[in-house]
Length: 391
Image (cartoon, rainbow, N blue to C red; front, side, top):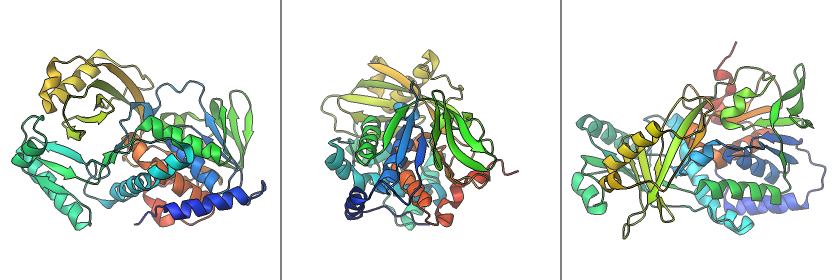
């Protein structure tokens, strides 16, 4: 399964076409519910395709998933030994790498792309064989991946604690989530999208006919609705089926980045570390705490211990700040992307878990292509909405 990533030339050509279209478009008006990473990416892609887009943003965005993200482009380091999630993740990484410079040109916002690779430390004998198999499997799929020996890790990352080796993914990296969301939104607005602040309460429908969305302030008519409300997606009223998306809290910490230490991204047991500016970001817990987006002393303490096992100097350091967000998880760990079979015009783009930043751009592209009428049966089959609650 191949996910196509538009080239810069294709983007520019399409943008020129959009700028010359009249207000009357063959693509129906689209309302995107949710203005985080996924919603903003969908709004941008749809506006680029010529749709007249309204992006509905919650008045109180506290707890959004991207706010508890380090912006990891960990397509390979976090992958299992199957192509379902890996193919989409690699396409998402390629999309962001190809569009980072373009977003800077069109919006003036640098999304903070880091292309320094990601190291995953291995600490147990059992894990050594598992990771070596994973590296071999990824290389067989034509991806760059390497097993690093104990000495290799010590030579390149002398500041880390001793380990038994590491999984090195030189193509992985990170972006700044806040800047990426801002860039997607700014580009969507530049292309004609309208941002409205209101709380979406539910769908506006007449039986099997979609009319739009009911908001707290008023109704929003639209022939097409994209549900991209993250952990809150399933709380919309009058959905055709229960939406299997639950909030999972992620707490994070920030410490000063050690002086004279090169930028790096490192995964350890239950945590990751990366440099952003002059800080070391440490994330993130995985907690089923409902819609409670507060940080907790036990959660932060556990995160501190896990990070200290990777970088021992943290043991005696106090964090500069802490924060949390709610990530939308599904039972099988894959996002929900596609049109609702029971209600034409309703599209889902949610349930991305901890990979929302990585998959935002490619999700927006897939949704825009689908709304435009392109057949995506094979590409979206693993993520189809009806795989849950199909009765």
